[in-house]
Length: 414
Image (cartoon, rainbow, N blue to C red; front, side, top):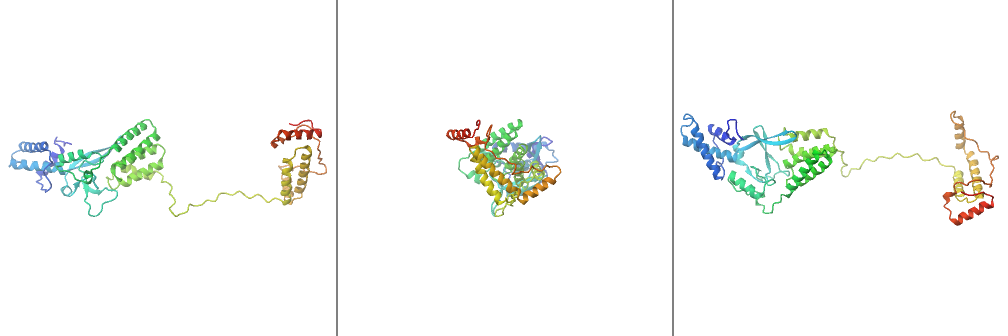
């Protein structure tokens, strides 16, 4: 970046520190890039020539001092990053360039760092970012730029040697296994697919693609990585639009747990995640191991009233009589049993009470009483005998039944 005066940020910071006559024992070689070293030397000389004689009484000493500060800033300054959101897109930009001598002298680089820098204005905090924590005695490391999840080993080492002047021997660089970045290519394709589906308002398909993208990223990112947490926030927003608020809340809760200790409290992703966790309903709590699920007794139907023993017996005798009737005589026999059943029922006290209540009810007519004396049972039948179709008689049985009906004078059978 450049300052308002047109100077590069590194040059402006180096000149300010030189002018303040700051002292520091941090490294000042400025990296191993010969062309960059020559440029700093020319820049230091130009600054001395541009300054007035009253400001610089000893030009050669001043040029050497400026040259050393340009080197210190080059390899030790930290970019103060600012995360902002514009039209739904999260952007990370360099808000300033700062030099923290104590931090620069104590924190080394790693391509798989266990710490991150968290900025609050120009104040900086070193936060352990490793999801599993750091054991006592383990060196705390940060990334100077290149990381193993975004750049191949050879490219990382070239960049570090050029700008910072050292060969990296971190654990990731010592790993001789073949690097595989296919997971990142897969994630990029899935992210593109998800955005295409979002453009079509096909939120369910977008949610499937976004979820698959996060799974692909988990193959390369360490658990608890900030970038992985930000992708979970994107997935949560798509899940909510697809009609899955519970899953969206889970993703936002997971992202907030990672982001809260690592980023500034005004981080857009963190603010959104915390807000949505509050607004969306919490999922139903699962039953803890060893705890029984509450039992709900189903509504039971009332038991039917006990039937009179004689009525039960008569009914059981009546059913086979009707089902086995194959002639008018058999039907007549069943009707005689029905008469006996009705006669017994009329003597049952509970039946008498029901009849009495029905008779007293003004809006209901009492059922007609059955008088055995006036009931005539006859085996003479004319017309159609109904209900015999359910017997499923064979042709021989039907012929036998037809002959029996013919003998009693029946006109026909249907």
